[in-house]
Length: 102
Image (cartoon, rainbow, N blue to C red; front, side, top):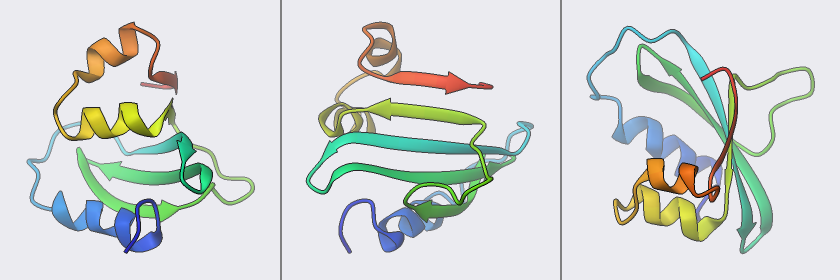
């Protein structure tokens, strides 16, 4: 398994399958990493009731769209995902770009 491939994004869904449910509507988030080893890469995660239910490596298929698009460098994403950096601070300093209905 390598970072951002189908197995990697599938592992996200499995790891969070027991997350507590919320009352949030269904949502598709497209994550874009601007400087991965393979260049610019993307993956999407679909949430229902706050839980990931599906994930896909790569861009969304033609004609499909994300509710939210999140873009950052790999270093920023990794620091947020590891807990070393606050996502709020990363957003407020412009290191993370968020677009869409959030």
